[in-house]
Image (cartoon, rainbow, N blue to C red):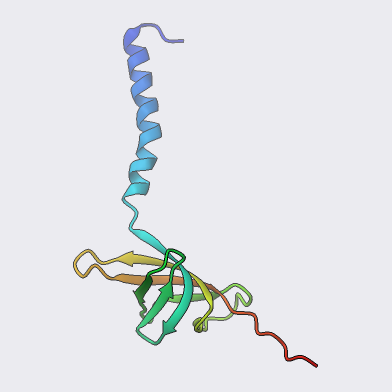
Amino acid sequence: MLKNHDDLVRSCVILLVACVLPTIVMATDSDLHVLGIVTAIDATHIEVKTSKGPVVSVLLSKQVKFKNKNDPKSNDPPTVDDRVIIEATKDEKTKKLSATVVHYSPVKIASPPR
């Protein structure tokens, strides 16, 4: 049990630091997410139409990992009209987004009527 006022203050400070420190660490994380539908893609960038309206361009490099929801073994890039969630970082100098991982779900191809 706490013996005096100093122990109470010390315990409160420790509890406060334990609660606030994870928030500070998470706030410094530079990962961003871009969600939407692919409108264009090539070897160097991908353009995504977000639900809020604007088209966001994200740079692609050879280190980017592509993860197909329907085929986890595939490393093929998405195609136009696929839904994507892109994990990206922002370069503070150029203010451009660079993808690290592109998660996507391919558009369902309707089978022709019989």
